[in-house]
Image (cartoon, rainbow, N blue to C red; front, side, top):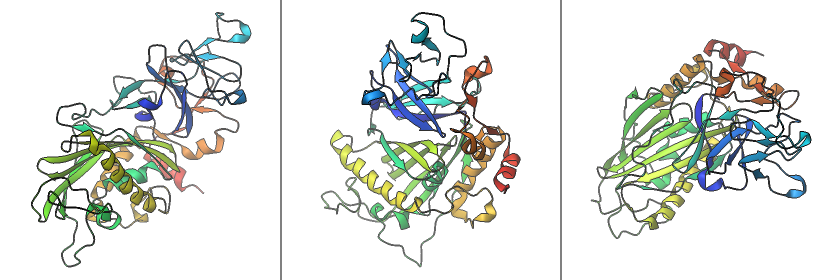
Length: 401
C-alpha cells in the first residue's frame, strides 16, 4: 500500500450535511464531513487529546455531530475543522486559544464523478499525481451509472491484476457469452503495453474473439448476455483493454462494436491488506435511456460476484514479490507492467511498511498518514506511518524471518 495517491473515501450521496462518515484506508481510520458551505473534508479520525474516534460512536447511541462546520469529538467535545486544527476545547472555555499541537492531519480533497477523493500523503501539490480526468464524464452521448461500491475480502493489488487479465474471462465469466472454448483454436492474442502520457501508469488493448451478439428481438436468458442492439448474428472481434493510473485506479475500455462502447473506471480503496472497497463507475455511449441503468448494474454485480469467488481463495493473499514464485505467461504482460510500476513507486519511498505498522499501530502508537502540512510545520502528536525507502529495503523486510 502506498501514500501520495488519490483514494476514494465515500460516495458523494453518502456524505450528508449533518453527520460525518468514517472510512478505513491504508489501515488507518479517517473521517469525512462537510463544512457549512457543503465542501467535503477528510482528516485523521484519532483525537489528539485522549485518542477517541472523531467519527464516534457517541454515548447512548446518538449520532456523531457537526457544529459550525467542525466535527466534534464524542469524548470531550473538541471541535476539529476541515484543516485538521482544533477550533474549540470546551474544558478551557469556548473561544479560548488552543495549543498548537491540538491538530490532526488533513488531506486535500476533490469531489468528482459522484465520489469524494482525498490525496493521502505529504507530496507537494506541484509534484503530486493529479486525479485522473475522465474525458467522457458528463459529455453528450454518454450515460454514467451511479457509482457501485463493492466491499471485497482481498488485497487491492490482487483486484487490480484480475481486472488487467485478458486470459480469465472465458473461464470465470460465462455470462459474457462464452459457454466454452474451442480447444483446437483457443489462444489469447498477443498484445502490447505502453506507458501512457500522463506518466503514472500504462495502457493496452487486446482483441477477443467475441461470440455473436443477439439480434434485435432475440430473447436471452437472464444468465447470459444482455442484447446490446441490432447486429448481425456472427462472430466478431471485441477490443477490450485498460491499464492503471497509480497503484489503485484502473480504467477499462470495452468496444463491443465500432459504435457501442463501455468505459469503466475502478477506483480502489485499500482498507487493509485483507480488504478492499471498489468504487466502480460504468459509462456507455449506447442504450442511453436511464431505464437501462438497473439491468446493467445488475449484470455488473453478477460479473463482480464471479471474480470475488475466485479472488477470495487466492493463495497467498498478497502478490508475490519475486517472479520466481509464480509461472507467468505471455498473456500476463499487463500484470508484469503493473508490477513494474509498483517498483517505481517503491523506489519513490511511498510504500507503507506494513509489518512495522501492524506490529505497533493501536498498541502503543497511533499512526497517521502524513499530510502536506507536515512538510512545513511541526508539533504533530500522531506518528507518521512507517515507510519503506526503496525496493531493495522492501525485499529485505519481506524476506526477513
